[in-house]
Image 1: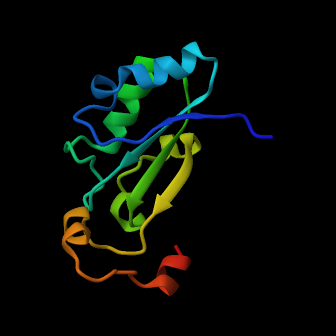
Image 2: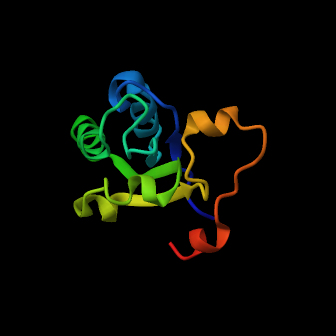
Length: 123
């Protein structure tokens, strides 16, 4: 049976400033911790922070306690070039969208935009 992983997924001004208790609670309970980031179409967090500095900030603040990082709710095109290769071995989960639309566009859509599933599968 896989070990439980304490997770937190929440857009915030700064990953550490907004949720300092999330990783420390996991650590205090002896649980591994995973942190997932939502990025916009420009590859930045909703706060405008770039992915590299967000990952660096969390690593420094937690002393590297995070087991792995995730990226969710974005088309691979939105973050692929924004993610420095030095972080690739720390990404343990990607939950991506086939749609290239922004979160705001998807929120306002009256019909599902499933993007191009065939093209998406090739990424």
